[in-house]
Length: 210
Image 1: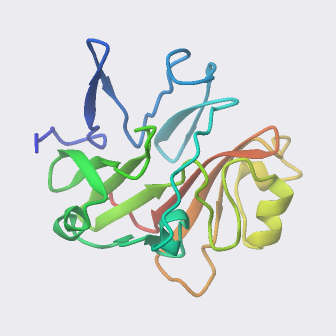
Image 2: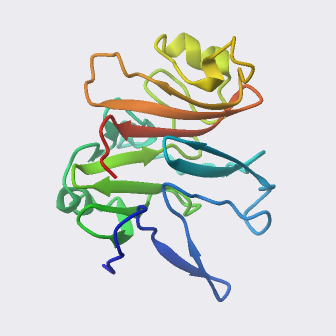
C-alpha cells in the first residue's frame, strides 16, 4: 500500500489508456467521455467536501449473487461483510476492497464488487467511514441512485439539507442527509440530488474525522 501525505483523503490510483486516474472521496470527478454515457459533471461543496458527479450516468447491471442477499443492500450499517467503523485490517480481510492508498488518518480503497471500478470506500482514524452506492445497490428502505426526492423524503422523515429545503430556493438540487435519527447510531446517508433525483448516495460515519 502506498502512503500519501496528510490533508485531503488519499485517492486510490489506477492506470487507464496510459493515463493515471485518481478517484477520491472529497473530489470525485467523472470524465466527460470514456465511461459509458457520462456527461459533464455537476459540482457542489458542503462542509469542506467537494464532489463532481455526471448527469445521466450510465448504470451497468451488477451480477446476481444468489447466496448473498446483503450484497446489493447498502445499510443500515454497511454492505455485506463491509461495515462502517471496522478497522482497516478488518475491511481488507473481507476481500471487498482493493488498491488502497493513504495513511493511518485518512485514505481510500476501490470497492471490488463494483465492476465499473468507480466506487470508492473511505477510512480514517475511526476505521471505515464511507461506502457509496453503485449500480442496482439499494438501501433497506428501497432507495437507490435514480430515486426521487419524494421517495427519499418518504423513506427518511429526518431528511435535511438544501435539497430538502422547500423554502430555500434549491429544493430538489444539492446535498441532503437522512437516517441520522433512526435506531442505528453513528451512521447516516448522504445524498446528492439533481433535478429532484438521487445521483449520488453514500453511507457515512457520523464523525468521520477525515
